Amino acid sequence: MLNIVIFGPPGSGKGTQSENLIKTYNLEHISTGDLLRKEISTNTQLGALAKGHMDKGELVPDDVIIGMIDSFLDKMKNANGVIFDGFPRTVAQAEALQELLKTYKTDVNVTLNLNVPDEELITRLIERGKTSGRSDDNLETIKTRLQTYNNQTKPVLDFYKKQGVAVDIKGVGTIDAIFADIKKAVDAVK
Image 1 (cartoon, rainbow, N blue to C red):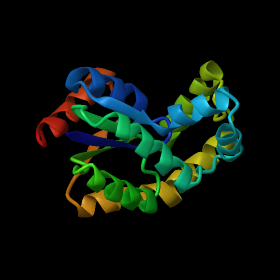
Image 2: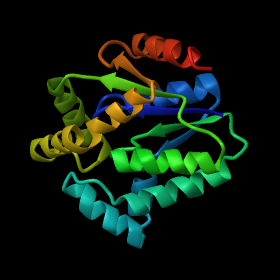
Image 3: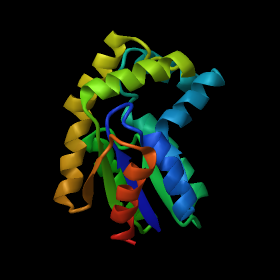
Image 4: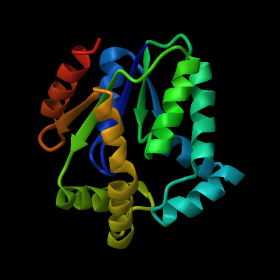
């Protein structure tokens, strides 16, 4: 099973590049953001709890996310592999994912780190907020999300670097050029 963590700050292109990975390698996609938005749109108790955190630019509690991931993986036992998009966001989540994957007798093969300058991220997120209805459409929330990423999520990259599975990818340029670099990194671990 090919397991890929696609990593980068909000607005770095994880969702777009995940779509390319899915098509190219016939992988399943776990986007915690999508899972949470589904819970919010269907007005579940989990959705209301998650929305409160997301609207403030905060992370949703680990136990909620890990439970959703486990449920998803249980349904994907025969898949070619999985892309983890927007997860893990903390070292504790990375450790929990590693333990969870062990129960499925697999591990993370590669972590793709999309590097994009903050100015570009802010521009992308403001535009995305205008068209998507997401809660990240104002500068204050965006800055909080980027600060949360830098303080809590960026250390996850060090976790994967220590394991020798992290690859830096320039996240600025054409979608095709960025994906060509991603494909090289994935093909190297297949």
